[in-house]
Length: 242
Image 1 (cartoon, rainbow, N blue to C red):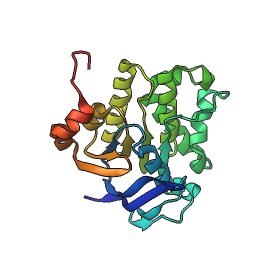
Image 2: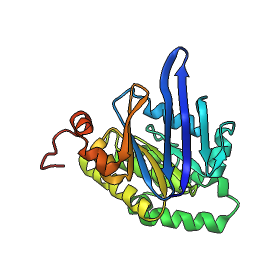
Image 3: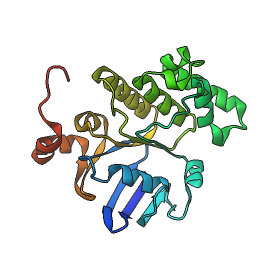
């Protein structure tokens, strides 16, 4: 197993409040790891620390190299891309322009950008249909597709997704997770933070459970789904609509 990103004893504090406490984990190349847990567990804080958006203690290695002192721009250039839960689209710009901005690092290679744009449109046909439409007029599901598509334009080595199903209808959630599974089949390595624990574990290879900043459980996704403690706290009862 080749490890793409590894964190050792990562801690993040907001003043005197410890939001993430000595968390260690790894994500294997071409796999999906997920971090689940309740609101306020520190999941988003952990992603921001990995991305260099928040200062942290501990050690982070990417592709075998330490990146603790690397700024956000350098991490993006190395291939780390975060899709935040807020999606952060340019709502007054068309879909196509939002996608082009995702290719900023590779902007001088026009042939490569054009190829990647067609690949995104093939993955998300709805975006192709709405390429001239302002991003702010899209539905919630379409905005999430656009956020994912823009991230893919950067050709990420590691795609970090923060709550991709947040605020979406069940049918759209299933579509988003089908896309995530498709990206995995294409070899995209992902770190997925998600409150929909069942969908996350059904999609991921490995999982971590974060509670109040502490890593309390970890294991293969299949093992975590069978763990009675995880099931009782996060999986609930599966209905016929699931």
